[in-house]
Image: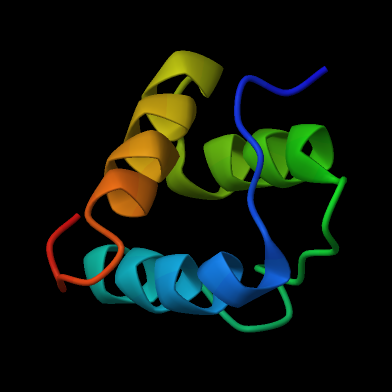
Length: 71
């Protein structure tokens, strides 16, 4: 089970933040369906060459500050 839960609504904002930080990530690579957090975390970790803990930390940070552009 994933360490976080991301709604489809929140994912739209989080995805924009990720694409700003990692400008090589495409919409296709960041496709997400609610409930598929484990697969998303694994995919992002591979794409940005980071470990799972870093990706979870980054996603949590994005969710906490959902209304800002900061990541």
